[in-house]
Amino acid sequence: MQKMLLVFVMSFFFYGCGAISKKTINKSSIKADVNTFMINWHKAASEANYKNYFKALDSSSIYIGTAAEETWTKKDFAKFSKPYFDKGKAWNFKTLDRNIFIANSGEFVWFNERLRTWMGTCRGSGVLEKINNNWVIKQYVLSVLIPNNDIQKVIKAKQKNDAIFLKQFKN
Image (cartoon, rainbow, N blue to C red; front, side, top):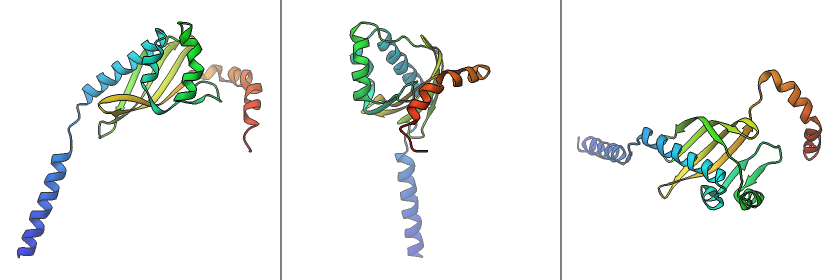
């Protein structure tokens, strides 16, 4: 009987500790913080604010651009982008809408957004992590949106570049 009581008490204790350690997350607050973070990141580019733009990227972040070869580390993307920022004109992406999804821990979010850009309508998607109470971009992907009715024209237009790019892969 004592063993059963001990097992019951220990189970209750461990369950109780687990319940206490779970933190409650405020999804509305996280979404508002992430939205502000992303607005400020895009604003930094439009103002050619190199420091603030790249401060938002984690040291291990990846930026995936619209061209097949554009899979940039933070360091490489910063090096590529520096001349644009130095000229005082980087890029100006205006957010049309954004969907934000939150991990149960509240420490990771992923999102997708539609943007008005110099390339027309684009989509950005990415993953953010909260580190030391600050959001950082772990990965960002920029895509040009192509209407289904126009896809054949785009396929034809990019055939030559695709053929060159695909030579590096065996298959």
